[in-house]
Length: 65
Image (cartoon, rainbow, N blue to C red):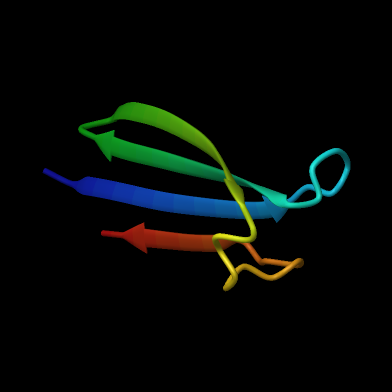
């Protein structure tokens, strides 16, 4: 039985309408026995409460085998 779970965290700052808001999209994909379960969670947080997020934040990708 092989269990592969990949966690992709993409953080992009949107300055079109909300300059103080950051769009955080979390994608959880798990493949078990050929079956794929896909879950997306989108959250909007203010940058004032998250000072460690820079204007140009890269995309973090974590794969667990």
